[in-house]
Length: 419
Ligand SMILES: Cc1cc2nc3c(=O)[nH]c(=O)nc-3n(C[C@H](O)[C@H](O)[C@H](O)COP(=O)(O)OP(=O)(O)OC[C@H]3O[C@@H](n4cnc5c(N)ncnc54)[C@H](O)[C@@H]3O)c2cc1C
Image (tube, rainbow, N blue to C red; front, side, top):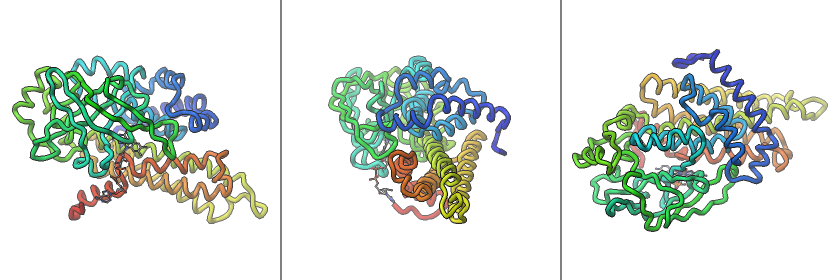
């Protein structure tokens, strides 16, 4: 495949190895059992994933390794893939990009060994799409600490996390809300913190939760990244020069010792914001669901007979399966080329949003038509198609809704802003 720096031979070895791991550790029966019984992958599976080296990105010979691994994991179990993305990759990404040397030293080796879990808490009850206006959680300085008050909702893996990466307002007087957010590493056992799991329709084996902060005190060294500059780092786009006071803080122990114009800000100017990477990760999850639904529908179509022949011989069923295969191929190509653009140092915001939508639509098509191909068995809880049908939906509206992703694309195409 003609992606930037793509090494077909090496990646086929990576793919066969992870496929073997999935066959052994994520069998159909085990994945079904997790869906029915777990709100997060069990500890023994987590250990096997760590022993395999899945959490240790430094092991990867090429940046595509991780994508190939993620694609195969998401096909075997989207819940396991999303658990890794939410509990390990998010923390790794945040701390690699913005952490002080001390924070990196403390956390990065633990992520690589699967010994620490984090979640990322941005969304609030007031709304996820218009998050700039909805975000109300505050962090107020008090001596050597910040004191957090507020509420977060739908936070993946919050119920198992050791630390909650929390986005809070630190400058209520800021002329622009985009200049008022900061990020904190909040220990999950902090006094004043309450976590309540929220039952949901799909991806049962990776739960989400509501978080209440009531006078939660965190030491100042738990500030992650430059104060008041979380928005451009997370979302990209608006990026101002840091105020002199923030420059000063950035080297003072009050905040990361790395200056705000370090790696994090360079990434922002290239459009490689953390949430942009999340779009690509989410596309992979959708791709995994699409592939799993296609695989199950394809096998069923060849086995199930009607009118004396396999239903896969009927043209309309072939039409569905071919459309599924095309949408999967299309989504995969867009995702890998989006990553390729990033590797070339080019902006890929537009392609990341497009990947997110194209992959989610592929998963929707495959799960919906998969249900039809299985007829009544699709509706039975004893077959896996119903799980794909429940699971695909989460990636349609999260982390960014399809409607909002379309808004972003429209603006990037030069159309007038609609909101
Ligand atoms: C299972 C699950 C896991 C999640 N995990 C996390 C997590 O780990 N961390 C985290 O911070 N958040 C998480 N989220 C939150 C998720 O990112 C939000 O649900 C998402 O951003 C949508 O926000 P909302 O649900 O408040 O919907 P709203 O923002 O209220 O949107 C409702 C509807 O209005 C539409 N809409 C809003 N504005 C516009 C507009 N301008 N143009 C067109 N349509 C518009 C939306 O597209 C949507 O259809 C999770 C959510 C779920 C359900």
